[in-house]
Length: 162
Image (cartoon, rainbow, N blue to C red; front, side, top):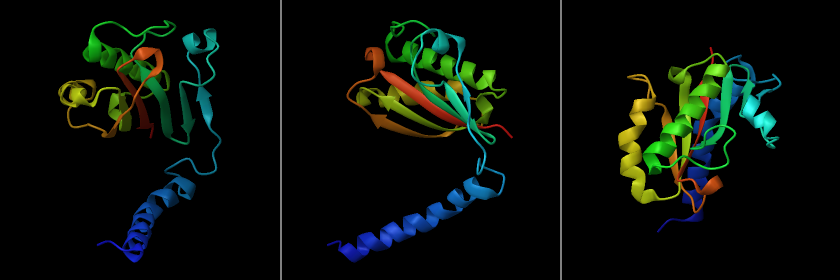
């Protein structure tokens, strides 16, 4: 049986493990500590008057907003299922990353929202093709009940622009 003390000890251990990463981001020049974000809006996002930026850069880190499988400026996802939508979403990510002077080898963390977790194996099969060999970012796949425009997949990423 797990007790409250066991959970408290786990929370302290997690906080201790996370502290160095927080310290890095706050002051030694490796994260964005003390630097104001710079926002990037693509011409299609600006033209559509969407209420968000495509990416934000803080220091050398680029945070790419959730990308779905629609062509920029088009209000529906591409047809063809998960493979086609993921391909378009990753093309969108690649375009934003490149517009900020980086490439897919600079991407180190992704969060993927998947509306049907039974397609996880298909996602795993497709995923490596979007990155240079030996540069697979860490990732988190989250099952969701719905995505914008009825999409099957959405991808947000973080890249290091050193």
